[in-house]
Length: 92
Length: 500
Image (cartoon, helix red, strand yellow):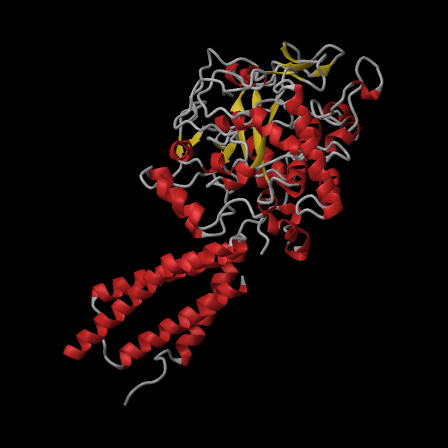
C-alpha cells in the first residue's frame, strides 16, 4: 500500500508545482481546459489502479491491455489539453 | 519580483498543525470503542447490510430465478446420483481407466497439477471438521450411530457449554434486529462472509431437503416439538424453529483458478466444507444463550445452497448452476434453522447477473465436457443428454425452477476422470467458476464499474464478455499450476484474498 501514498504524494507535489508555475507565468486556464485536464488525470489514476490490481489478481496480460485501452486515451487527453493551452497562450 | 515559494506564512502553517491535532483528538474521542457485546449489538454501525446503489432489491422470496412454489417439493437427497447410475458400465470403466492413467502420469512423471505434492494436498486438505465431530448418541446407542454431527452440533463441543437453564438464569432476550446483529457479528468472527435471514414459511420448508444419502434411515422431518432430536428413524426439526440463517463463505481465488487438477480439487474439498466451522460454533453459542440451531454439511446437504442463497439475497443463479455472488466470489452458502428470533428479513437481489448469462457462455465454453446449459434462456425443463440411454436427470434435478439446468452427470464424469486412484479421492472441478465473468477479486476498480453498468443496462453485456476473454481472466494455464507451491508468504491466509 505504500506505493499509493507515494503516488498521492507525487501527484500532490506535481499539482502544487504545476499550479505554481501557471501562477508565475500568469496563465489562467479556461473552464474546458480544467475539465479535460481533470478527466485525463482521473482516467490516468483509474488506469494505474487497475494495472496494479491486475498484477495483484494474477492476470499479467490484463496489465498491458489496461495501459493500452485506458492509458493511451489518458495520455492523448493530456496532450490535447496541453496543446489547447499552449496555442491559446501563444495567440494571446 | 517573482515569487518562487508558497505564500503560506509560518503562522498559518503552525495554525494548520494545531487544527489538525484538534481534529485527530476529537476523532479519537468520538470514534466508537466497544467495551462489550451489548455495545457491539446496539451500535448503529452494526446494521443490515447496505447494498450498493446499483443493486436492486426484489420483493421477498422473489428472486430473478422464477420459482413455481406449487411444483417445487422437498428434494430427497437420498436418491441423488450424478454418475454411477447415469452411464453404461463401459463408460464408467473408461472413466476409471483415464483416472488411473492421469494418476500414474502425475505422481510418477510429475504431470503438473497431479504431482506427489498435489496428491498429498487433495488428500490432506479434505475438511474433516464434521467427520471428526462427536455424534449425538441415538436412543442410548453407540456414538457413531449418527454418521455426521452437523444436524444438532458436535456432542462434546455442546457438552462443554452450559445452557442458561442449567445455570438458573433466563435465556437471552432481544429484538429480532438486535439478535440479527449479534448473529452476524458472531458468524463473521467465525469465518462467514455475509449473513442474511429468512422466515421459515412453507416455501423455505420446501427448500429443506427431505433426506441425505449418508443417513438414509433418518430423514429430516418437521414436527410440533420444542427441541430438535435424533432417533433411529428420523432427525426432527421443530416447527418452533421459525427463523433461517443463511450465511456465505468465501474461497481461494487463485486456488480455484488452478481448477481441473488436484490443487483446485483440494481447495474445493477444504473450503466447501469450511462452513462447518462457523456452523458448529454457532450451535455452541446458541446453547449458551438458551436457543438451538440445526443444519447439515455440504454434500448432498441440508438444502439447495445456491437456491437458498439466491432467496436470501447473497447472489443470483446463472448459467453456471452455482450462485453468482453479488460482491465477491463465494464458495458456498449454508442454511441453519433456529428458534432465536432474528431479523430483519432479507430480500433477493438483482444485479444483472442472470440477464448477463443470457448472452454469455464463458462457463459453457470453458467446460471440457459442456456441462453448463447451452440454451439462450433458462427453462423449466430438466437437462437432456442425447445418445445416453442411461441418463436419469430425475436423480439430480428438482423441478419447479426456471434455470439453465446443469448436467450433473457430465460434470461428475469430468471430476471422476481426475480421481486420485491411489486413494479413490474424487477430484472436484471448478473450471466454470474460474471462467465466470463475475468471478473476480475486486481489487481493480474496473470490476465494480462493470458490475454497476451490467446492473444498469444489458446493452454492453456481450462487449464485457469479450473483454473478459481478451484480458485473460479465467482458469490458469496448466504451466502455471505448480507456481502455487512457490507462493510462500504471498499465499493468502486461509487462501482468501490475492496472492500479491
